[in-house]
Length: 307
Figure (cartoon, rainbow, N blue to C red):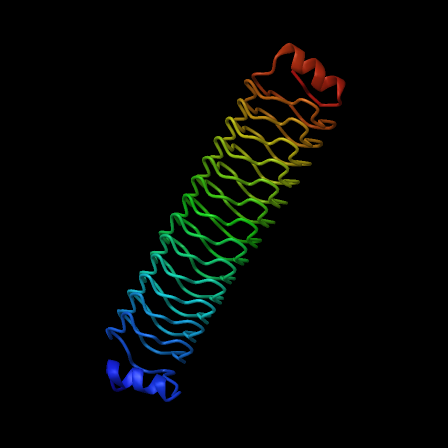
């Protein structure tokens, strides 16, 4: 396959020609206007597109391994099944882009704007994406294991069945997000915001949620085994049937929360607040840190095995 030149590429775009399957590896198209171009299935390994305008461009199934796309504008672009392994996309604009099943393993997404974008079933393992914006985005069944999204926002995002094993998510906002059956084992979630988020049947075993905000979060049947929720705010949260065995809940605030049928066996409860919480059927077997007054209150309101 012949290697095309920059001038050939720009001329082809100007005349409305498709560049599907074209060999464009190592080509420097930085700052170029490629809006609306068809690069589906094209080969752009190590290509340079810093600051390029690629609005509504079709990169579906294109190979962009190790490509430099820093500052690129990909608004409404098509990236489905594109291969962007270890690509540089920092400060890129990906609003409303579609990247279903895209491969972004190890990519640099620092400070990207991907509001309203679609990354369903995408491979985002080990990406570096602090301070990125994914408000209202869809990452259903996406894989984000070992990724770093600290100080990013996934507010109102659709994240059901996504996986975040050992991900670094310090200070991330998941406010109002949908995380039904998402998996976040061993995730670092210090100071994260899950206010009014849907975490039904979510898996968070051994996650660190120190100081996290989970006000009015829906966490029924969630797996919070051995989780750290020190100083967390769970006011009005619903944790019906949730597993909190061995959890460190010291200084956590469960005021007005629903803990019915929850399992708090061997949980650490030093300074934990249960004011106006619903605790009927909740198990407190071998839980530690409760005051005598709290024990009496819990028994009176239907909690079980209170020591």
